Image 1 (tube, one colour):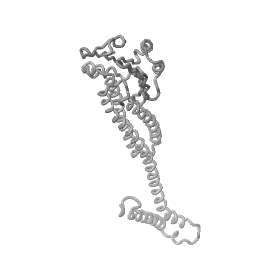
Image 2 (cartoon, helix red, strand yellow; image 1 turned 135 degrees about the vertical axis):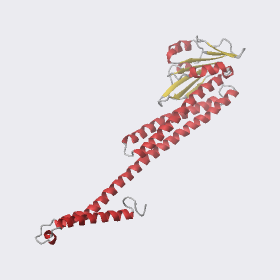
Image 3 (tube, one colour; image 1 turned 90 degrees about the vertical axis):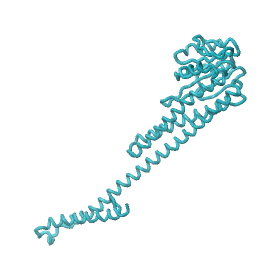
Image 4 (cartoon, helix red, strand yellow; image 1 turned 120 degrees about the vertical axis):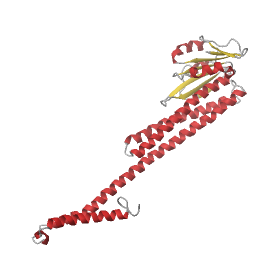
Length: 317
């Protein structure tokens, strides 16, 4: 627990959980999985709206904000490194911020020292919210960069092995993941707009400016997710195109080989007929003649295909 003293402009760290004794002081109380059992007893001591108390009992599946007379409940979600969602519930009063996380996001680890080193960053409830949201959106942006790298690697795999069936399955899973993340971030963007508006009673005008600056980051995340979705569609279509092109190349090669061997097969069938009078049967070198004729015929056709550019490098290449 951190408490900002308005009299001496300092931030102190305390082990016990309690609201500030002075209305001019500001407190940030953070609950994580290791001390979550203390959350319910502490909340029961607070004089808050019954609906607010009910909203604190469970984590919300979607980002939202409920504003009451003396407090507000904010539900937001942070994207983890494994692309899962970590739910966060925040109770905001006029001189306190109480946060509870479903998973340990190490918010206290990242924010306690900056708050202590720079007490003015805790001089307002809105500024505390800003730093919490800023830490979460920074983590979201890092995850977006990781997703970008994953999609680029997926695109490289398409060129490396277009017949790999795992690629299509990966595209499907990524599209489902991106759809879920986009719904989360888009709803969270709406929450941020509400908090940064002039009608939100628990943030000062100065802190609202800081919170508004985060809206651009949320817009960037939403835009990136839309771009990734389009890239996945392009990757899927690219794989289909490469598969078709590779299949056409195979069929072309088989067709050309068949065309080469058809005349040779004709010659073999011609001299294999069971007629009594076939002049070449009496030749001493008739067998060698037939073989040479077949080879010359096949090479002539192959050379013609190569010259036309239908096989290998020719004049059209």
